[in-house]
Length: 228
Image 1 (tube, rainbow, N blue to C red):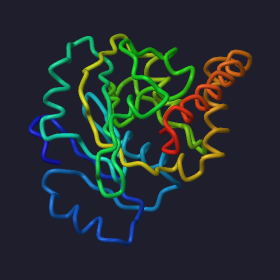
Image 2 (cartoon, one colour; image 1 turned 90 degrees about the vertical axis):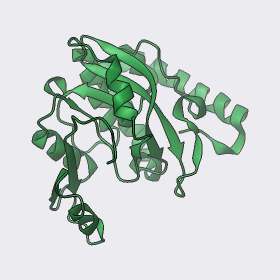
Image 3 (cartoon, one colour; image 1 turned 135 degrees about the vertical axis):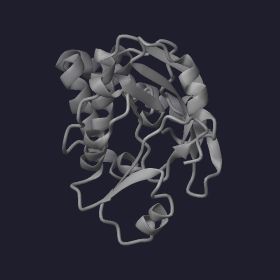
Image 4 (tube, rainbow, N blue to C red; image 1 turned 135 degrees about the horizontal axis):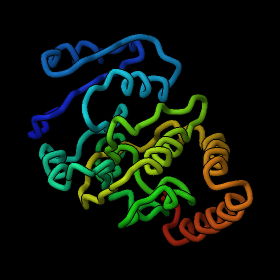
């Protein structure tokens, strides 16, 4: 909330939570659409939001994430043209106290490409989905039962995107400690399956050798903080 860009449809998909989420949401009920009902997990909830969305573009922010500044979308859409299908940028990593840790492109092994294509994803998620704004009509539903469904979704969007534009804007604050961090071993397996689907078994095998070596060198370089 609080964006000065006027053309926004806010959708909140709540999994029938029992905390004060919906009480807070009710304070803004004239500015957003909220739905609270049981779901089958994160990506099921995101698919519900995608089905209900009516805007030209969609962007997903999860619990703990938020726009980087009040004028973020105003800045992003200065890069829009009628041919634009995708707009992307960076995210600021923050801890549970919302203290800034640094840009993801600086803290991660993944460098944000100047010219993002689906082939850019061969070594993993080089752009956060919190900083990935895509035309709704080319956005597929997320696959089920895979912790790295966001990687698959971004790849599918980029395969269809006719014009993908780097906005050089920090779009969101990304709070660390999501599902993939909580279930790290499974997320590595799920990522391997997603990338194998798009890049083929042999290419993906060799790519993951590089991914493993890069992670080791990065950890040595950065010390105990690791990567995101």
